[in-house]
Length: 281
Image 1 (cartoon, rainbow, N blue to C red):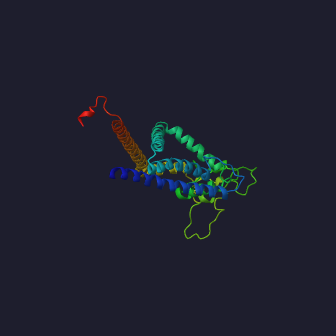
Image 2: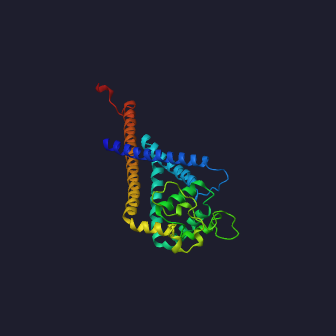
Image 3: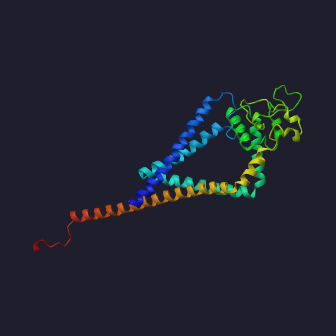
């Protein structure tokens, strides 16, 4: 019984922790969505707020099945939780294998997605903040180079573009200055008209895609550890759910056997033997 309680409450605590995290993700996503302007374009791939809501909702549903099923010993909920986890685990492994085999295709689609985000840079405040954070953190600009910002309507480098930011790049592309106290948002103006050697003195010229690949290669051990830790956690939850399901099944089978024995004993007490000899008494 102690082993069963250990399995039960370990699974419950793990699912409850992720359940709380998913609720926080949903709350943050809803808050960001409400605070956002109403005329922005909602797209799952380039809207961080919508992505938080969707991921949080799926995570909330899955962890609720495990949390409530483990606490109340509901085998059907635990089986649903187990099945979803197994499906997610298999999908992750399949995605890793496909990504490794078709690396070029994955890189092309990633580049296309990042370019789509650049096009919608000014349309979504959350997306804008996310891109600025990535460019400042990785010290990069654009997807392949700083001139990718010409794809954006506001930064398009053409004579017909009336924008004041034409031929420029966002301030997050600019090189940080020592002892800078006031942020210069105009530091990237007109940079696209310069050659790379001249532009490199003011802004980052290397694309973010190359920086991400370089970071992944330099931190391959960390990426492998995080991926392996996630898979190991899912396997542990699968094992805990399977163990509790087996224990519930075992207890129910025992209860059925006990009920069958009780019914037989009741029948024996109500029915006398057919050839009972009452004279012996």
